[in-house]
Length: 123
Image 1 (cartoon, rainbow, N blue to C red):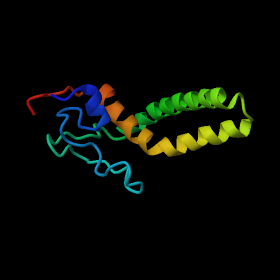
Image 2 (image 1 turned 30 degrees about the horizontal axis):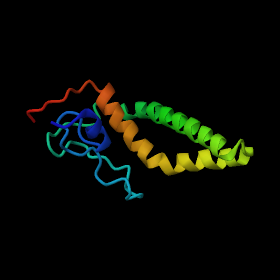
Image 3 (image 1 turned 120 degrees about the vertical axis):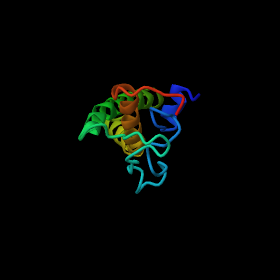
Image 4 (image 1 turned 135 degrees about the horizontal axis):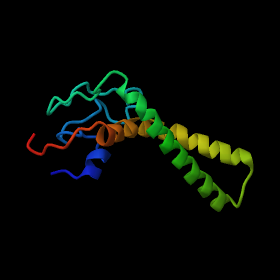
């Protein structure tokens, strides 16, 4: 049995926790957003209804706000209150760098916690 946290971290199917949600790894930067339509293991359809993943943008927004606060506080503590430009460059840069991860994990979190799909260990 795979734990919930590890399954989310590895971007596995919420129903069987064996098949991958995405077709390519995140480091293939031109293909990071391609999802499997069905789970390769249990054939679960990831897009439960048309437009289901639009809700993932709210999760992505929350991740972005959390990251911005963390980076802002980190810059403040390390740089001893530097100029506004340092804050902007560091926060915007971190959001751009983390964007592929934010895109993927917001969809996976949406599938796990808001789709109503239960884990079935026998699959």
